[in-house]
Length: 544
View 1 (tube, rainbow, N blue to C red):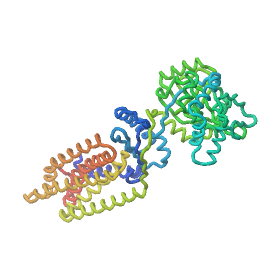
View 2: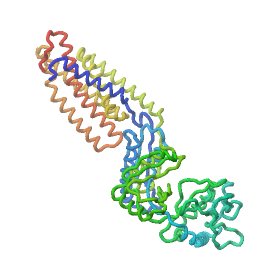
View 3: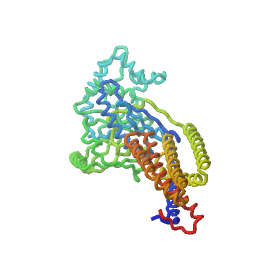
View 4: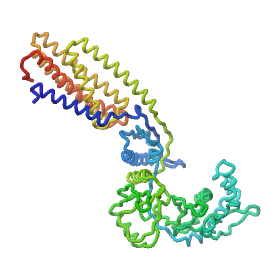
C-alpha cells in the first residue's frame, strides 16, 4: 500500500482537502479568552450560615450536574464549569450573545409543583385571625416602618404605602364593575391610627379559589404574607401563592392570589420532557410537558378524582396557570405562558425544566464580561508570536538543511492545515492555552524532522547512495519519533481526563498536533523527498 508516488500524493491531497473543507464549513471557533464571553462565580445561598461544609459540597455537586445539562442545551461550545473550594462554582461561557438569558438559565430554580386550588371558604373565615396576628406581631409603629421599608426611599412611594396601610384615598377603592370586596375583618385599632388590615386589600378574583389584589397593594400584601405569624394563621394544609400574570379590570390592574393545598400531589422530579410551542387558537406561548410512567399514573389518578376542580401549575412559587380539570389527564400536559410571552422565553423555561430544578437558590457573587477588544488583543499577540516562531523555524531549517529544509517546511505547512482542520472538525474552541499546545506540537514536528535529517546525514557520510540514505534515515529515526510522540500523547490524554477548561483546551490541541506531526514527519516529508528524488530517476516504483 502507498508504494507509488501517485497513491501517496492522492492520500495527502485527500487529507488536505478534508481539512480545508472543515475550516470552510465550520470555521475555527475561538474560546472565551479570544472571542469574549461571560465569567460567573456562583455560590449556594446560605443566608443564616447554618449549612455545613459537607452539605454545601453536596449541594454544589448537584448544582454542577444540573447547570452542565442546562449549558449543554443552551448550545455554548466548550463551557468551563469548575468547582472551587467545595463551595463555589465557576462558569465561563464563550461567545454568549444574550448575557441576561444566560444568567437567567444558570440561576433559575425551575421547581415545578402541581397543587389543587381550594375554595375560599376556610381562608375567608381565617382573615380576622390573620389581621390580628399582624397587629399582635408588629404593632402599629412597626407596621408603619414596614410600609416605609417596602416602599423604598422615594418619598412618593412612602406616601402611597402609608395611605395603603393607614387608610388613605387608595385604601380599598375598586373600579366600577369590579368584583365585590371581601368584608374586612375588625382588627384592634390604634386610637390615633386607622390601620388597614390585610383583609381589606382583598377582593374576589375571577377564578375560583383566588383573590384579587390591586397592583399597588402587592408589596404590602407580600410583606404580610411572609410573616411567620400570618402563615401560622392560615387554615390547616392551606397556603396563599401569587399568580404570575396581571389582570386588567376596569381602570385598575390586579394580581391574583390563589388559595392552594400546602403539599403538591406531584412535582417536576417526575417530568421527562418539556418543549416550547405556540397555541394556534389563542396565540399564546406554552410549554408542553411529558411525565414519566409513574408520574402519569399519579396524575391520571388525581385528575380522575377531581374532575371539575381547578389545578394550579406552580413554578418557583408562582402559579403559572390554573386550568379546570375537565377529564382524566394522562402523562401529558401544558403550562400556559400567556399571549404576551415570547416563544423564546417558553423555550428557556422548557430547557431548565428538562435539566431539572436547582436544589437551592444560587447567587452570582462575581460577574465579568470579557469584551471582544480584550480577545482581539490576545489574537493579535498570538498572531505575532506565531509568525515570529514560524519564520524563525523556516529560516533555521532552510539555512541549516538546504533543500531538505525546504521539503520539511512544505510538510510543516501541511501539518498546520491538518491541525486547524481537525480542531474545526470536532468543533473545539481555540484558546490561548490551545495556541500553546499548537506551538508545542509544531516544535515536536520540527524535532522529528531533525532526527530524520541527522540520520540521513550519517548514512550519506557512510558513503550510501542518496536514495538508500533517505530510506535508512527514515527507518532508523522511526523508533525515536514513535517513542516521543506516544509518551507525549499519553500525557495529553491524562491532562484532558483530569484537567478542566484551559488545561483541556491545551490537551485537545496538543493531541491533534501530535497525531498530525507524526503523519507529517513520517509520511508527508518522506513523500516530498521521494517526489524530489523522482525528478532525478526514471522509475516511480518505490520500495519502502
